[in-house]
Length: 214
Length: 214
Image 1 (cartoon, each protein chain N blue to C red):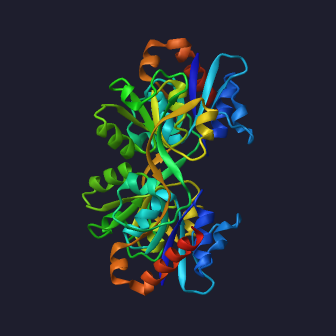
Image 2 (cartoon, helix red, strand yellow; image 1 turned 120 degrees about the vertical axis):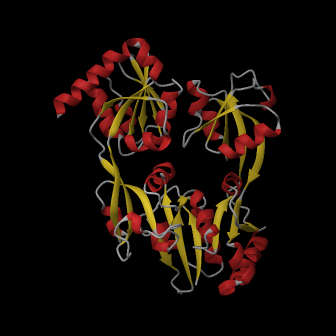
């Protein structure tokens, strides 16, 4: 039986909708009274795990799930050993550098060397500042990264931006986009290669759904 | 003005109660409609930041907050350069090793070498298994660690246990306690040493509150 790892949070509804379109119903996860983290589709042909977005690639990498849905941002940050098989084209957002509106810096290269940059995406942030040869101190945070510049702890942040509302509400402004991100269907490499449990047919069904939607 | 970093989640209510007892009212953070991450006490003598528990030591370490409240578990995991000045004696829980009820292992040393151990507390878990000379593979997860053994991804977990209800509901059983944890009042070392803004008086007031409660 195929197991699918679904991400809690922003991508969950669209992810469940996508699998519904290929005949797998995991909508029990959308019930606010649900406490289960593991359910079977009513047709008993597939199982789903409900996990944190960052944990989706882990379950797929270790083969506990053969498929998973997760944002490109998470894959890029973690560098997981999984196969990204379909760009699902929802959950669009971008990884950006932002500073205070009152900041004198309008491009990241203008930041003084050894500036502090707060981020939940430590790896993406380091990689970017290395690519522009600017030595910075990355301050790892778990949430509310916008507090970094507000409290004066950091000159800049690297964070995921979708509507830009959070930045605006906090008096911050984007000065560079590192990359765009969308939800990805990922697969366990070995299961994909061996086509275990008809995995490739299921992936093809998902892919054709996306083509129809576009 | 003194700034206090308060942790979102389980410790927030008791933390706000504690500061209320020494004349600082941050109860606006308990209002479910509140979206602010930074507020001033009505007497205008102190400020509070509302941040993730794991970020509290970061704000205190960098001196953006002179005081903070956070669980000993987080301090131990992160090894932050902060001064732990008062054991607040609430938020009690323990860091434990747990396995499936059906597991043949009743003590961590019995786990086969190179077993997989899922945990949000990667550092605490590694440190423990090194201390008993058992090589294991730590699988870092962000949430719902109990799924590790349930899905068969890991033989054991290292996680924080308070009532034990989550373990029980998921058919897991504790086989070792690594350490006990309670909420700690932490201070920025330099501000503490220099007694900036009467920090030491405030700490003494908090300490005497705890002594009264015990």
